[in-house]
Length: 385
Ligand code: SAH
Ligand code: SF4
Image 1 (tube, rainbow, N blue to C red):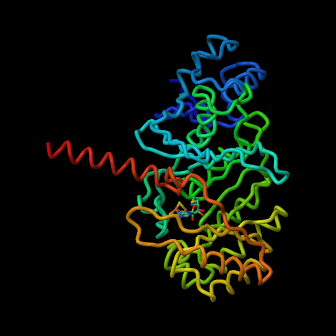
Image 2 (tube, rainbow, N blue to C red):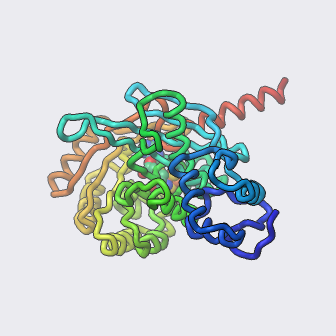
Image 3 (cartoon, rainbow, N blue to C red):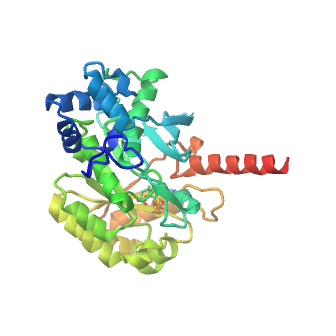
């Protein structure tokens, strides 16, 4: 292993994955090894345009450089553990990480556009952590507890791996250099802003012209409300879109279902959102899951209307998606309609999210939860036998 004192990670005991480095870091490593700067563009091209899965395939890099890379870094694609296709075209992928942990990614394909033609939008719902520490009472990821943060490459490769999968297994035709996914939502497993460094590194790779070249406006970060990190993200130059998982419009209700609210109560959260909005000049979305007998009352309508008007934001209502092991209920269609109409009546821009992939457990964390249960059962069975 090459010894160096810089912070790129070349000498760390556990070698870093190449796709956890940004262009500047790749440049520093290659300069240190005495290579010309155009090699940086070539290397990044192999990673993000040609998307090779091994250093050996980088055929126009000199053998010496390939050996140096192989000695100092890893290139380790995610391994597909399971894939499920919904009747509506949604595809859910379960990936096995190098340490055996499982994460999931959901591809939500083109739907019909406003003009009635088929839209070419492909949204990918990407995970940021294995499990989640925030313990929201309605959420499968919260139920599992927190295992670890994802490294930047494990976030980045969810996009690349889905596109690789589409190329190798058929499905919709893709451009030769990937490019199937054109909308990214950080709404998979985990709290993205709790993994701030790796998240922003991965977003930089998604967004950069040397990376996946996906516009910042096509990248949404969803958070349960980590106010200080929202303020920090507000200081970055990129126009990432922000979605807030509110789910309760008063501290009393939110405290009950989202423990994070005791740390960052609604007022603190909303003022961080105002800072974000002012810095970016972009509209925030508020996500609001409707849970029967928990957050559907008239006092929530009034409080939510007040917050939405203050932020001038759009509210997305999501009827609760039942999770095995959680005793919460989805409200009736009538209750959902009444809640929507009451907000609308108060002048709030509101939509009810049409559900995708319910036949394949596409709610946050559910596929992984089922797989883990199966593993536990198998182990228990093994021990008993
Ligand atoms: N931790 C981040 C991002 C991941 S969760 C966050 O909470 O925003 C992505 C979205 O799925 C969040 O809005 C979350 O509240 C929602 N969600 C979680 N469990 C759900 C369920 N059972 N039904 C419907 N939406 C759910
Ligand atoms: Fe974590 Fe988000 Fe689920 Fe809450 S809703 S437990 S923050 S993943």
